[in-house]
Amino acid sequence: MPARPCGPYRPSGTTARSTAIHRRALPLLLIPLSGCSGIQSALDPAGDEAAAIYTLFLVMVAGGALIWLAVVGLLLHAARRREAPWSEKTAGRLIAWGGVAFPVAVLLALLAYAVWLMPAIRPWLAHSAPAARPIEVTGEQFWWRIRYPAAEGMPAFETANELRLPVGARAVFALKAQDVIHSFWIPALGGKMDMIPGRTNTLSLLPTRAGVFRAPCAEFCGASHTLMAFSVVVMEPEDYAAWRRAQAGGNPATGSEGERLFAGHGCAGCHGIRGLTETASLGPDLTFFGQRQTVGAGTLANTAENVARFIRNPDKVKPGAKMPAFDMLPDGDIAAMADYLVGLK
Amino acid sequence: MRLIPKEIESLWTLFTAPTIWALHFLACYITAAVTCAKAGAVPFSFDTMRLALGLITLAALAGIVLSAVLAWRQWGFGSGDPPHDEPTRKDRLLFQGFATLLLSGLSFVAVLFVAMPLVFIGACQP
Image (cartoon, rainbow over all chains, first blue to last red; front, side, top):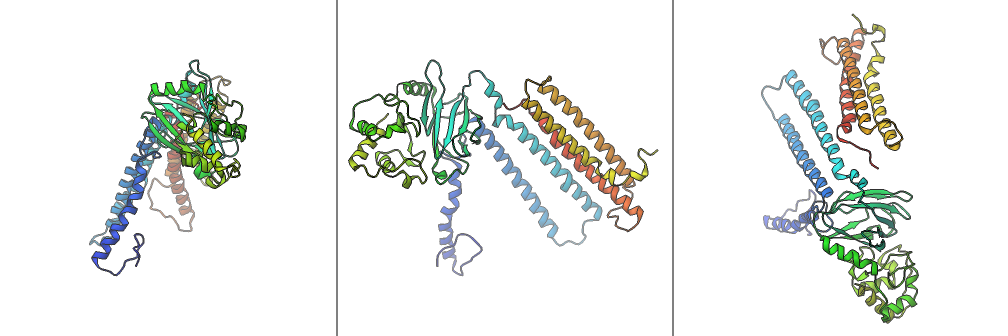
């Protein structure tokens, strides 16, 4: 008989069997706990805004648990058989205090706390600071176009599907959408904000811990919505500055076989690589592609095999992707191009 | 001394407190929305608006308290116990008084909740 960890079903077996069931059920109980940390968890904050949301969450859970215990306690008390029931006057007083005064006071306190917290979660006054030039992030089906502004004499540049930020510096984002509504959400750094076609939404985040985080699209946007994510790499300021300086130069031509094939098969018609091709920006920019964590906007690990798989048939990896299949190319060509792209570091 | 004629101490007074709540809600939301949408074009600052809405809130609360006092009087200062469901003119009057008192309490709390952001929000979102 299969073990059934959930539901009221009770096998008529021995204690040994129910122990076995408990042992099998234990890993299932641990699954929700795995959400408490890791690269995509609001419960493991790495930024000021996320920390404020985490505190709010803890207060709500603890408060809700206390109230639940009190209500269940009252229920048990009311269900108990007793000699002399409460007088109508005492019961009326309990209802007035416990049913009216207490909820009003608690809701007033919770509302005050939440409204007081709002500027910490959405620090909009930070936007008007003169130094804050926004990083423009545009949601497209099913990837992220990221434009860094010119800063400290370094030119503006475009990248895709991976955001790099210095730790301890406030980042401001101008959020846009190309086709349908997407939503920008880095759970480890803060709350989410929608990206709406024809509109620019502004969000500000302050990363406080270096690390690599995952940011999923948080608004259903089509067949590959669940495969639309980007990586966020929060770096030490000096590492970030070095990375930022290197971006301007891009990947100049080396004359490799993969590079020749990349241009020859028309990839450069949609994908830009700074230093090699400048103009194309229909698809994701591929400059320094080898540095990225993933291929296909958070879909697969960034390895030559996965890149080859994506080139061969993007729609199989990512349903609804606009890039056409290149499965008519010889395997050798695809492998050479994949090696070239993974080598762009 | 009667503050209002006994004839209109009826359904009209029942609606007073929720009406004040509705008007206060509209005053707060419309004023804040217009002030932020026309930031720079309006001849007063955000803090002036907060102060003005704070005074409007006090006036609204005072109106609701007045409505509650009148309702309490209509209810006979709590002399009789609800539910007041006899088909008599007296019970109808007491029932309306009690309902008005409860609605005034609800409206008082609601106006406080609506006004809460005035205390904590200090600027428009750009």
